Amino acid sequence: MDGKENPLELLVMCAVMILLSILGIVGGLSRRLFGGLDGLLMLAVCLMMALIAALLLFGVAREQGWIGKDKPAEDASASAPAKAK
Image 1 (cartoon, rainbow, N blue to C red):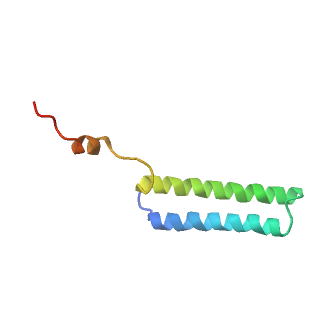
Image 2 (cartoon, rainbow, N blue to C red; image 1 turned 90 degrees about the vertical axis):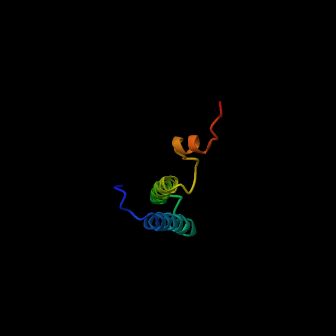
Image 3 (cartoon, rainbow, N blue to C red; image 1 turned 180 degrees about the horizontal axis):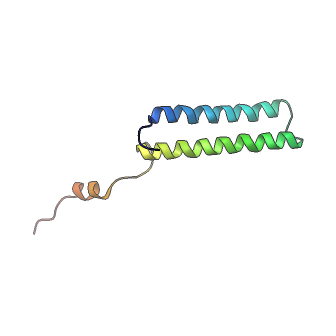
């Protein structure tokens, strides 16, 4: 990422990929495909796509400061009161 991406666009793309992956798994379950090799491969692909999109979504959220305790060191030292001698 070069910093020109809109985080909202990335959020929407990740959410759509996760939703499509879940729909693929539900579609496979409803057609009872997971008994054969084709169904297992479909399950593996859907789970892998969902995992990759979730990891990207987590990375974007952490980079934007929506989750996690990612505070710079200079902010912590500036907020601490200075000791008088």
